[in-house]
Length: 515
Image 1 (cartoon, helix red, strand yellow):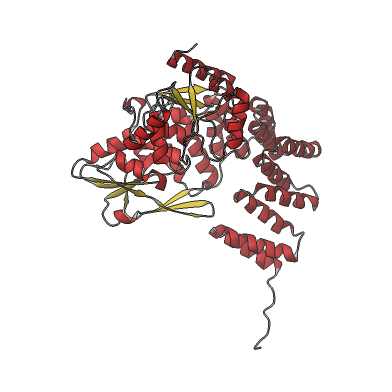
Image 2: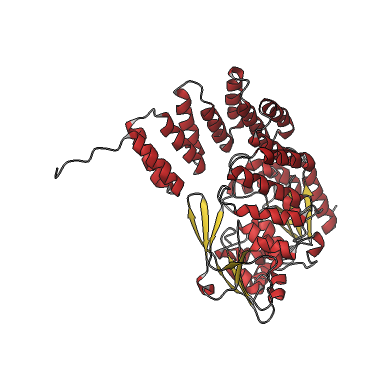
C-alpha cells in the first residue's frame, strides 16, 4: 500500500547484517549494525559478543573490555567473555587485573584448559615467561591437542632461548592444526625460527607464508602480471620490486637491491615502489631505477598495494622486496661486506655536520617503537636503563626518537642532568631523508631494533643495536648481517636489560677513549 512504513529490521536481521559487513571489511557499517541491534535489545548476548570481538580487531581495547564485562554480567559464567576481557586488559597493559580475572574463574572451573592458557599468555606479556611454562603445561595436560597453547608456549621458549623446544611445540601444533589461520601462523612462526637459527634457505621459503590471506592484517598486492620467482632470469628484464610491511623492513630488505641492479644489467630496468617518505632516499641510492611511492589502501584489517602509475604496462615481473632474499641471500656468506647501501643527501649531511660542529663525539639514541600497547613496552629497555649510557663521559647525545617524546626527554634530563640535543627543524617521523643525513653525520647511533636503527644501519652509520631474545633479523649471527658495521647487544630475557645496557656503555667508552 502506497505510503506504508517499512517495518523495522529484526534483531536477528541486524546481527546477520553486522556479521556480513564485518566479513566484507566494512567495520564502520558493522559497528552501526551491532549498535542498532543493541539499541533494541541491550542485553543480547550475541550482539554484545560480536561487537566486543570487532572492537578488539579495531584495537579499541577499552571498549572491548567493557563489552565483555557486560556479557559476563548476563551470567552464567561465560568462558569466551572471560578470555576476551582478559585479552583486552592485556592489550591495555593491565596485567594484574587480567590475571585476577583468570584466577578467579579458574577457582570455579579448574578443568578449563583455555583459561590456563590465557593465564600463561598473560604471564608472558607481564614479563614472567619462565613462570608461564607451568601454566602452559597445565593447559596442555588438560588438552594435549590445544594448538593455541602449543603455539604460545613455543613463543615463550623462543623468548627463553630454547629454539629446539619451540620447534618441537610448533611441529606438534602443526599436527593438530585446523583451519587456514592456524596452519599459516605456524608455518610463519617456523620460518622465523629457521631464520633465527641461521637456516636461511628453509627460512626464506617458509617466510612466504607472511602473505597468507588467513593471517591477521595481511598485505594484498593488486598488481597485474607475472610474479617473479627465484628461478626467473633477470638479465635484461623489467622488474618491479614492491616494498612491504613496515618502514624498518623496507630499509633492511633494501640490502639486496644493489645485487638486483647488477642482475638486471644495462639492458633491463628496475622499478622500486616504497613508502612515500623513502622515495627521495631510494632514488638517490639507485639512480638507474625508477622509484615511486607504493599506492596503499587500508581497509579493515587488510592493506592492499597497487601498481605505481609509472610502471603500468611495462614490467616483465614484479615481486615483494623480501621475496628476493631466497635468491640473493640464501646464506650468511651471501651478505656482502659493504657498509652503507643507501645514500643520504650530501648537502644535508654538510648542514648537520655544521650544526654538530667540532666538539665531542656525537651519539644518536632512540629507545622505543611507536607502538607501546599491551606487552610491547617490555620489548624495550626501560628509560631509566638509558641513564648510565647518557652519562658516558666525553660524549654528546642527539635525540633520534620519533613521535611525541618530550616527557621522556625531560625524564632523561632528570636522571642524568644532561640535555639531549634536538636537531632544529627536523621532523624525525616524517622527514626520513633528512633523518638519514643526520644519522650519517653522527659518530655513533645506539638504537633498539626500530625503523631509525634500520635507517642508520642502511646509510652506514656505526650502529649499536639493543635487542631481545628471538630477534630473527640477526639470522643466527652474532650481529646483523645486513649492516656489517653494526654490533648487537642482546638480553637473554625481556625482564633484565641491565647487562646489554652496561655493555653498550662499555663499548662507547672503548670506542671513544674516555675513562
